[in-house]
Amino acid sequence: MKKLIFIKKLNTVLMTCCLVLGMFAFNADPSYAAGEELTGLKAWDLVALMDKGYNIGNTLDATGGKHGDIKGHETSWGNPQINKELIDGIAAAGFNTVRVPITWHKHITTVDGSYDIDKEFLDRVKEVVDWCYEDDLFVIINVHHEEWVNVSDLDQSYEKVGKELKRVWEQVSEYFADYDQHLIFEGMNEPRAAGKSYEWTGTKPCYDAVNYLNSVFVNAVRSNAKGHNPERVLMIPGYAASMSREVLSSITIPTVNGAPAENIAISVHCYSPYDFCLTDNQPTFDPKRSADTSGITSMFGSLKSLFLDNGIPVVLGECGCTNNHDNLSERIKWFDYFGGMSKRYGIPAIVWDNGNNKQSGGECHYYFDRKTGEVAAPELVTAFIYGSDAIVKEATDTVIDFEPVTTDAGTTTYTPRDLGFTSSNLTCQARINHTEGAKLGFSLKVSTSIEDRTAFFNMKGYKNKTVRITAYVCSDEADSVTMGIKDSKETMHDLTSVQTGKDFAPIVGEYTLDGEDSLLYFKGSDETTFYVDDISIELADENGNYKTPAVEMTDTYADGNEASDDDPGKDGSSDTENTSNAGNTSADLTDIMQERSISDSKLITLFVLAAATVVVALLVLRHKRKK
Image (cartoon, rainbow, N blue to C red; front, top):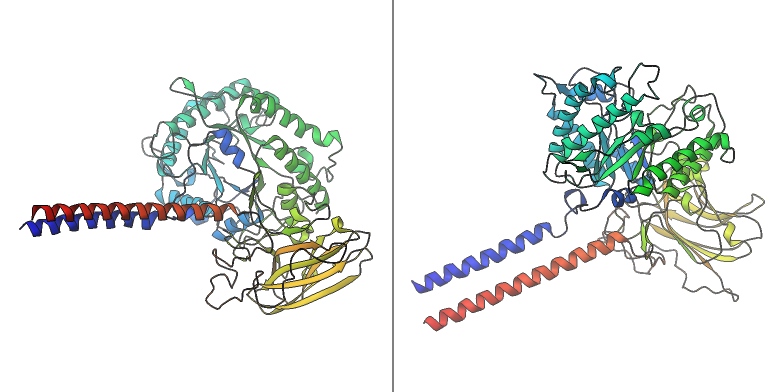
């Protein structure tokens, strides 16, 4: 009997240990979408993590279609339904924030004032939010084109509006309670008295009405203490989300239980100068002309003095400028200027895209192919996110990689244009990558739509220098990729070529540049897309020697180890790829965190095993003593 009891105790101990170990085994390294919460941040610190963003406009915020018809509603203004390819493309282009405007009334059933949102529509919104989470994006959802918000007598009917607004946000906050701080709620879009002569300027009673509705929204969310609702960042607009000093000055921070609400950010929209940004009346923009920039500089000044200086963060929820008879060069200037101003003030800016790819008529904001996720206006996207200045400006040993890199100064993401490539050859593309540990897998993509299938890199920092260039190339189908130098006289000097396929292969060339600006180029020969990654430029010393040995142009990795057929990194499509980084010594933040997570899990596992062994040993000793 004693032996039987001992065996039962031993089994209990071992089963407990197995259960504990099982919990660690299933949760040690969760995917981002399933875990790794962003939590505990104040609004100021969270907004500081946001950068440039993209609005998926005129889609879930459309107002057509039959009641309850999700697809009919979402596509009623001419755009396709949001898909995963679009979200991936947004992330790959360098945006880290997505605003998803939503119109709810087509999916609200009202019975005795209940204002119940159809669960199927909430599920559809969730699907889009989940795609954003999978790509590590901040995502903003809101109440957008709602006629029941933008009533003409807003200054008198605000309490009635508030009843429905309260119910909507009670349901949304309940549904998304467990989503971490990557998800941000924006109470309203541009609340205003529609149809009035003062629709876009407002009056004092209208300003007060919007403040009342902001309070209703904030308290509706904060009253739900589940999940991350108590700490979720909430965005509130002034009247019509106006950038005017008068409206901005009228905004009051709501109170919750008698105290100023925490984790609040101000939402503002900016289309300035109006005639250039929203109409065909002004085709040009000059950043040196005060008439063009005064509205923008005045707005940023107001945002700083009214909010930033008081510790209240701001998000520019909408901005952009319309295509006016293909005035691309002028729009580049605007995006370069406005993007630079938002970065200088530390205010995230989110470009408005309504899917209108016309070239005139006003409100032509089109930056992505909604079906494929490809960037449709690469020059504008690059100017907006990164500005027009290249980073490589002086001769030095350089590694050009398109992954986020971490240094003592923080984590930085570079794109082709950011590193000196001509804007027509943007952009990075997800899941094609040579660098180890890349989460999305960025590389320079040269598609069949690129003119002459050639990508150019500005070598202006290497005048009169002898350089050795190493890069890694692959292609969707069999191809031949040539690397060369285009000199100041427009002469193309092919340095070397390599046969490419789906596996990355090194390409190496050496050249002495002249005293004028030159361009490095990569050129494909067949009609297939190719990719370039991990480009290193090395300077020769006075004796013509280089610091590192040359990489041989064979099917090897940069460290010289042959790629075996079962190596998961050989095809360039895995997140756990080969160990080369073409000389890049900067640590990838994702790698560090993954290694740290694995190490912690191993330590915990060893500790549990050790504890289990001690318990078993004590039971054995105790059993022997009783005998």
